[in-house]
Every structure is written in C-alpha cells, then in structure tokens.
Length: 147
Image 1 (tube, rainbow, N blue to C red):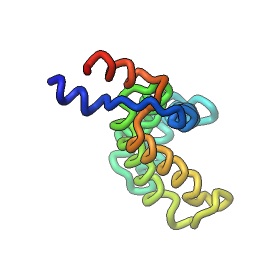
Image 2 (image 1 turned 180 degrees about the horizontal axis):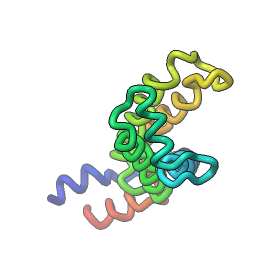
Image 3 (image 1 turned 45 degrees about the vertical axis):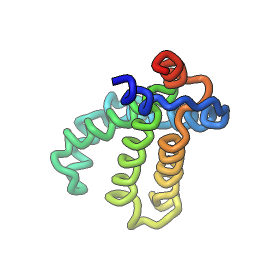
Image 4 (image 1 turned 90 degrees about the vertical axis):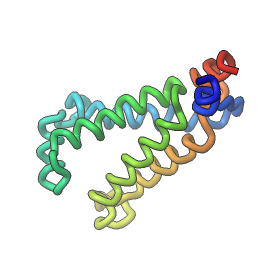
C-alpha cells in the first residue's frame, strides 16, 4: 500500500506549478459552479443538462453532473494541491471532450466560441498531471509522511 501511495504522491519541490495550479483551480471552480449550482450566471444542473442533451451528450443531466463535478471539485483539488496528477488527467479529459464536442467546429478563436480557452485549460491540466503540485501542496505533505 505504501508503494502505491508513494507513486500517487510523488514529491515535487518546484515552485512553478503553484501559479498554474491556483489559476487553473480558480477557473475550474468557477465554471463547475456555473454547471452545478447556477452561480456566476450559470444555468445549474437542470439547464446545463438540457443544453448538453440538445448537443447530443446524453443523458444530459448526468453529463452536466459529471462535467460540473470534475471542474468544481477538480478545481478545489488543484487549489489545495491534492491528488494533483490524477486531477490533472481528469480535467484534461474533460477539456478534450468539451473541445471536440462543442468548440472544435467553431475554429480557434473565442469570439466564435472556438476552442482556444479549452485548449489552454487542457494544456494547464496536462502540465500539472506531468509535473505534480509543487512545493506548497497537500500532495507534498502526504509524500513526506508516506516516504
């Protein structure tokens, strides 16, 4: 069990992931809160679910719950630096689905509802999946106790 935990919480003392973690975390929490709770001008689960169903992501309510939960709780995990590598993978997949199903046909630019913003979040998530949380994180605290 210790071996499994030591792989999940690989120690990383770099400072650079902190800025990426906090920025991505705040953005993901806000977008997830729109989907889950209707905060910040969002439509909540019901409205987001109806929209997702209308674009072919069925069942819409469940897809809204999954995307909103990945974004909201994943964002909280990034801010705390908890399970950062796994969270980065989950969020990268979430962004890939958003790009392919919603934004890709609109081109790159955000003015046309393009995929630029999703691509930036995908890159941030993938980077954190590779690098880990960095120095000031719960992952590092856990890694110290496991090793």
